[in-house]
Amino acid sequence: MTDPLTSRDRQDGPDLRGHRRYSGVIAPLVTPLDLSGRVPADDVARLIDSIRTEVTALMPTLSSGEGWLLTERQWRDMVDATVRHAGGLPVIAGVQLPDTKAVVARIRLASELGVDAVAVTTPFGAGIDQDGIVGHYRHVLATGVPVLLYNEEAVSGNRIEADTLARICRLPGVIGIKESSGEAEFTRQLVASNLGVPVFEGWENLLSQVPGVHGFIGPLANLEPALCKALWQRPGPELQAQVDAACEKYGILCDDWYLRVKRELVARGVIGTDATAGGSGAAAVPVP
Image 1 (cartoon, rainbow, N blue to C red):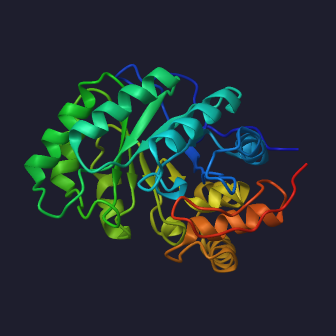
Image 2 (cartoon, helix red, strand yellow; image 1 turned 180 degrees about the vertical axis):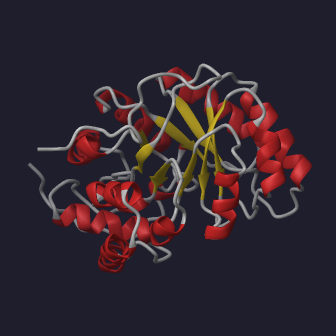
């Protein structure tokens, strides 16, 4: 039997800004695809059902969901299937597109599909300065859809500095930060700064080094959400070693981690193929 939610991962009311309060393990879902490139809604439903008791929200179409590679049709179908099969779990749709205009248009589509919030990167390209990043999020927040900031560099080519994050977090509509800088000291600095929004660690291998984070958002939650939850609740070397072993087993820290997660989900009978938006993977396995 699953343990009831603790006070650290319960969502029992809005934050001081009137938004839903998020904490705990949020699952950045992989995007199931069939061999023709379509999103099978039944696979999405099985994936959600396999983790729902251990997570507090669902996050389709972010990096683990190949958000920057999906066609608009794939993105729409994945978000729609997640909303339809969420069963009461909040849905935070990932938006990873090159420029502010495209991001705003995609957020409006996400709102039409019924999401609770969106997770948004900076614009793509290393030439974006910190003031430009603030301006980007001002436009994004003007949509009225709650936004979780995604601080990463691998896809966008940008990293949001601590002072810039503080500026953005003062804007109405920000609901949290997915902190994927890969630097535990930077994450600890954000937590200590009391930004007024929850900070989520985005790297499994750093989770025990950032006590005080409000939750975890990472690809291992597609496979071992209970283990991720345990380490977040009780950070320490023993559980961290278990998480590190799971990351090694499933290839979580490899560049093609989403493909490797899909292969494990195929082996478990959760999804039907390991096909990816980039075209790699082709193992078709019947699922019940």
